[in-house]
Amino acid sequence: MKRSKRNFLIALSLSVVIIVVILGATDFRKSISYLLNAKPLWITLIFGLSIGSWFFESLTLKIFAVMRSLSVPLTYLFKITVIGTFFNGITPFSSGGQPAQIVIMQRRNISVGESTAMLVSRFLVYQSVITVLGVIAIFGAYPVVSGKISNLAVLSIFGFLINSAVLFFLVLFSLSPRFTAKAISVIVKILGWLRIVKNVGLATEKSLKELGFFHSSMSELMKRPLVLILASLATLAQLICMISIPYFVALSMGIEMNYFEITAVQLILFLVVSLIPTPGASGVSEGGYLLFFRPFFGESIGAALLVWRFFSYYVNIIFGGLATAHEIGFKSKLRS
Image (cartoon, rainbow, N blue to C red):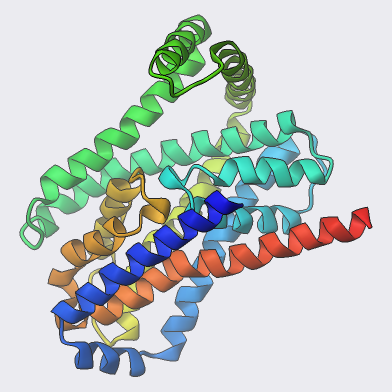
């Protein structure tokens, strides 16, 4: 809990500092004016997109739950999804979401193996879909928007290569279990030699056990093409909700834009910052948004940044924190 609070304070502090610096570097009065004159209808729709991204992620989990013959209500998976976004937002590399979800599902008598299999399957599909979308964004939108954003080629290729590397290793792990087991053993030994891992034997055993879950999930997923297609479509809908927010932020401020251009830029930004080590990619997200979207928003960039960051990050923290507190309180009542 202490580490989570520390990470949350780091993320909050970085975001606030960067936003204050950006507002200070822009016309503060105009930013406030744009915020006050933002159209409520579009702001409501932006909030709906945030909820939509949670819903489609929970729908993906539901698809995998049905595949594994688990009777888990969609409403509960929605709650689990929101809790995951909270822990992703306060941990480095967004690494805390899945472990927290596994622990919480275990409290509801969902085994670690089943919950891990669902979450790993969802991650595989998510990584595949976002990599494909990244290819489309880079090759489709680059000729149009490269003139507006300096160094877009370097940043977009960097983000694409990182996510492609993740997908490549996931596929490699699934196709070659023996190679993967040996690689994990070597990596854990190196970490032990560097004194990052204290108990090499225990860490190796735990890693190989997780690898077993991964292989079983991957092999079962490959045998269910219909499940794979449905999960991919739900994930695609989730990502569309996420990357569409900047477009509707523009509409809320009375700015007309090309939907495909701005969503492609948002996707490239998402690829770039997705593996930033700071909690919630704080600091880099705000700076990247300023770099990528200033040519589109002009003097309204400060207001646009505030609205975008609130609905893409702080809404996750607020509702995810409330859902986490409710789940912990619910379990405490059951125990008492």
